[in-house]
Image 1 (tube, one colour):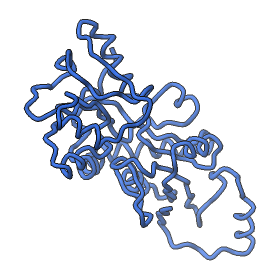
Image 2: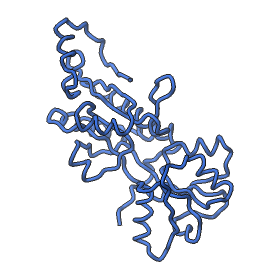
Image 3: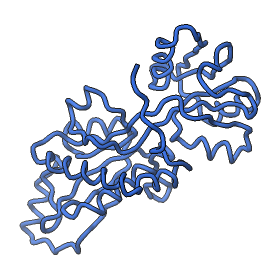
Image 4: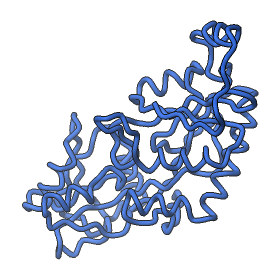
Length: 281
């Protein structure tokens, strides 16, 4: 856990301790930090480097944890207790109110906007890129006609992006395969380097640049084929309406000040906000 404390903790009276203990499994919104500072239970993925991950010694690192810390720094009335939690537990905990704010590279959907409170300002950009052999001349999806593409994770968001493009561009037929299991990114990128496949298509925020550098692969990435927005999800309650409004304003400030761009450059090696969001066909 990572608790950002804005004020020196007061000594609890016995009654205060008993009151906190009585909270048990009550929603996190019932738990207050000292004085007027309210503790918000926040979750982020533990293994999605460079988006968010937890080190062996318990440190929580990545783009989204640093965005959360930047938000918390500006919110005087809140203290974020950041925890690395597996996806399934994140989702269950947010639905029940055990956790109050989740990040995880989420795309906005009507279902999420109905079930949770969602700030209008995005937390970041999600880029989907092609990874191709250096000197291949492949720069766009049209260039992949007649080429071999690494198998997509069945039912994944990346596959859906390409299927949507294919539907909008029926004259450019791509050969698409699906995989029943997750194939490690290192394996996918090595298969591009050795010529087994011509392109790998996937999210650009999961450490591909480090893999390419560490393995000395001659693999490059043209401009994104798709740019989406990522959002945070907040437990839906009347009390959290104010939290959502304040987080929304802070995210806008962080974007306009360039802070989100700086965090992006640190973890992704580029400013993801330089790209315009892809318009739906």
